[in-house]
Length: 410
Image (cartoon, rainbow, N blue to C red; front, side, top):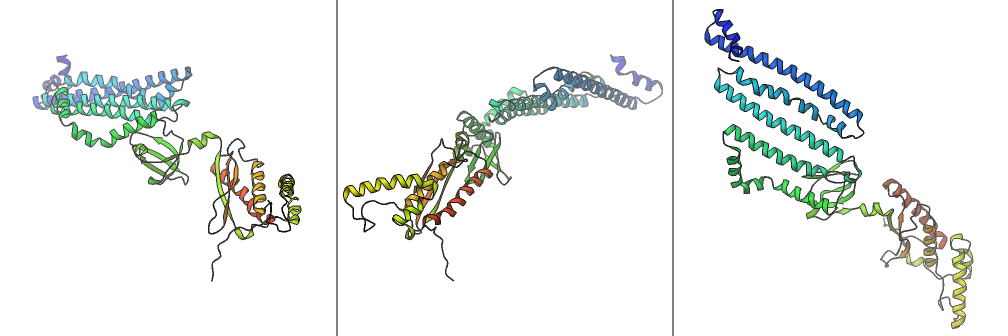
């Protein structure tokens, strides 16, 4: 091996070149030859490993091997062989330059550590991407766990590199850092909080990717598109992205609409305010007129018989309309809306449905529709509400009622 190391050196000496110059030219020639060889080996290894990986991926049914290729794991592994060749032959190249040899050997060890970290990163990223293709893991914060593993890996790699640079043993270096753990905890406070929060969010099933959440403190109102160690990303309905600290999900209050989405309906809770001055008892003429409204015909007929029997039983003097019990236009209108909503094709009949009278206000009496639409999509949901209340607003006048409108004086 000694002859090979100095073959160029001996040749140059024979040609009359000075020893010092011959030594440098010998080193430079060996280095160029080594780098060319390493480059060729690296190229061939990458091609062979890529072809092998692609062939295996085509023959298998799983997507995992395709994901490994996408995340460049075979390509990163292919760099291992050229790196080992460098580590083996660098001492031969710099045999006459001890300080340079030590420096380059340390550099190659550091590169080995970085390459190992890159391989680990590609593998973990592939595992993460594969798990996201499985239904049971799609909505889980897999990113957080991958980031935690990578943080520990980078910490170990960083400590190893510093130990190599300083010449201190890894164990002694780690022990020294342990004494400064309070400072380390302070530096990585957000990371630690995020990690703990990610675990709690996952275990308690508080948020999943794809959930619609409302977080007023951070101005978030939309779908969760990413959960990682430090942040949760929410795509708002205006297509902006809001970033929320992960630990805020367990320290602050937010609204998760998943329950509504899973229920099969989206709540409609809206009212119109009826003028009190337009509410009245119905006389015989009013009753006959309202009977022509088909949705309440049977109700009026049935209720009128019941009322007449009761009034006869108690001997109510109907010359004064207030005596006994009576139908009101407000009550008939409420029944009309109840029947109308019950028969609406977009309303979920298996969930709570009612039309109710709320507490009177200074403007009038609110008549509220409380129901659930079958379609939960925002645009369609708003269309359903609009369709219902278009009809409500147009129907009010048929019951001799009026909706409150604020009139501003000039």
